[in-house]
Image (cartoon, rainbow, N blue to C red):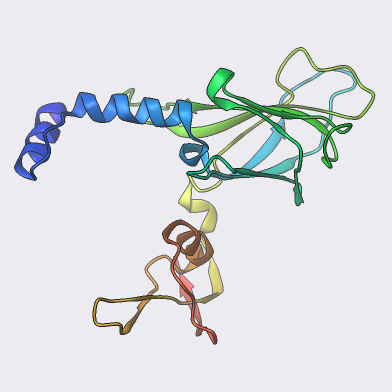
Length: 203
């Protein structure tokens, strides 16, 4: 029923593809481009080994159409990582060949909860270990895409309005998701006011 409705919607809007084509395209994108995994991930310890790192880490992934992606671990923009994403789905680095504070290997997956037809949450799995320690046999840290659960943003915030130019070159404000202003601006690549307005908004 859902597939049939989607096919009808595509056809009525002039598209020659089907829902199956969209699914195949999504699978291709997630296996070939980090743009599909671009986000902030909070990595929680998942290993019980004696020498396991008990620290919660934050990893930011920024994809790029030209292949020049960016990985930031705990505020450090990692320079010198190895990109094997298309080959085996991993990105890795060592403290010897990069400026990273820890050795690391990361990969991604979708975890579906409930309805199996849902895309599910984006998850980063990581092996993180200190310089001089052996490479872990199993995943040491794992974390969901920070933006998957909007309830995390419930609260009152001082934020800046974002603006974009309309065809008439006038400015319009965007405040529907003011707590996500920075994220929206990054995704849409829209310019900001030089002197942004400040407001409070309750989600």
